[in-house]
Length: 123
Image (cartoon, rainbow, N blue to C red):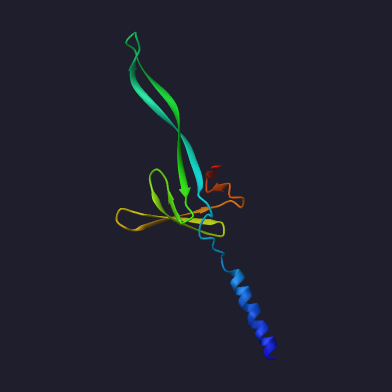
């Protein structure tokens, strides 16, 4: 009877443990992702040689790179913070000027090629 009870407790414990999210706290090596977007720059009021005014438009691509360190920190051009990985969710935490935290959750693809809308950069 005790052996059956011990087996049942072991099975229940193993089942409960496997139902919990599996944390993988950080990337195992320095990992970079990049997000790019396009915008337009306008120059209005330019004058040509005949004195006529005109405007020009120029398409620009802006890219932001996020670098994730194995110690659980990340950095980009505009912010720094910490991150954790649980299953396929990467939670990024930054601090606002008033000391409060700002959290963003991004989905990591199964193959690790994308994080949210960002693409992983190869080494």
